[in-house]
Image 1 (cartoon, rainbow, N blue to C red):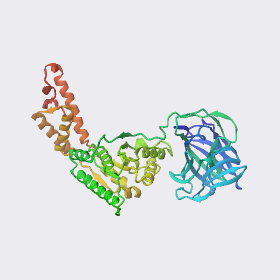
Image 2: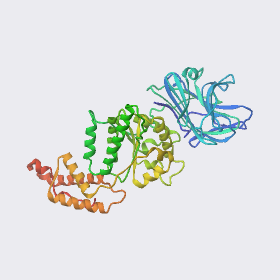
Image 3: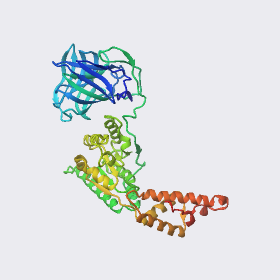
Image 4: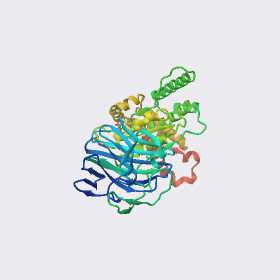
Amino acid sequence: MLIFEEYFQDNQHNWSSRSSDECKLGVETNHYVFEHKRTGNSWWVAWNSADFFYDKPDFRIHVVLEKVSGANHGFGFVWGLVDTHNFFKFVIADNGHYRIAKCENGIFKDLVLWKRSHTIQYPNAINILEIRRNRDSVEFYINSTRVETLEAELVTRVDDHKFGFIVFDKIKIKVHSLLISVADNSTNSTNSTNSTNSTNSTSRISQSDSATTASFAEHEPPDNDTLEAIFADIRALIGHDHTKQKLFALTNFLNVQTERKTRGLKTLEPSLHLVLYGPPGTGKTTIARLVGRLYKQIGCLQRGHVVETDRAGIVGAYIGQTAMRVDHAVRQALDGVLFIDEAYTLAPKGGSSNDFGLEAIQTLLKRMEDHRDRFAVIVAGYTEEMEYFIQANPGLQSRFTRLFYFDHYSPSELLLIFKKFCIDYGYSIDLAAHGKLQAHFEQAYAQRNKHFGNGRFARTVFERSIEQQANRIATSLKTLDNTEISLITAADLQLDDL
């Protein structure tokens, strides 16, 4: 649960605001400016106070910092702060190093001496620092990569509960956001103390963690599922002959690799990630769900569920939110499939280099590496857009090597889809309606463009037809038998505006 949320849209948490020859501090548009103007191995600290997470067995601190200017000295996050000479710190520097230390009476005692990390972005770049407690250990992350794990006893036994930011010798930074969450549902009111001035205020405790959690739908495999049942469902799909062949070939390959591993023979590490591309309404979501079931039955994934999301579900509104949303979606998808529809919107052609969708891609690629045996990613979208999307990032090209193309449904296949809706909902069509539908689907197919709805179009035609049929029979409903009440005729196919 998110219990402290700060995006610096205003100064409701009363962070220190001042400007002098020594420092500049203040809330500006969506960030906190923190500039230290002195030199000589000195530091400046800005803080708030809270006592609602230090004693929790599981908490997470997430802070987004941007180095604006200055020398290669440290800047970062502080906690357990008693005063400006007693605190813990997690800092990074523009030479690509980080440090974790305790300051006691103005003397720094290293828990982790300056250490190199290739994940630090520099010079003058945005970096995300995270501190995550998991029971008896505390993990430290830089840009979603874990760099250190320490015993919780070392860094959570504090004499006071202030937390905030630190900058050293002539450095200017922007703090874009600070989020603190805990695993339980408890929330407490807290007093907030600003930096350098000891005025009190009440911190806002957010009751919603929607800013840091992904939005998605989750689809579970059916109970008592079998490989034979999955194959039957694949064969029952209308069209997609080439896709079916590729799915059966993939199944055979994975089965052979599993058997070779069982026998102690050399194996290739198979990639479970897929690209499904083609026009809308061609069954890409259906295939993704079948693949989840397939991977479970083969033994590649333990659960085989499918977490279905899109750009709106995983991209946040502020710097740093997106990484947390992607992390949440990945955690939900572990042992199953993460399905991202219209994935090309994460890196649209002609899009801005500052688009948060790029943050989603980088975080996703990292998680695909961290959990490469725990989940599969399936991305889907239009043909040209998905080709550009995959080529836009070398990491995507190397991880998505299996591409499944979905073509438009033919007129005959659209008619079969319509008939399947009739069977599913207990309707039938007469010969005149059959001929009229065939002609309508042929005309629509001939006039199609990249946005043609395919299976969705066939469903719309079906729904319109049964509405028209209901209008036709409504006045004589009581006199009709079951066959008549379920029959769609040519008169029910008023389709000129579809």
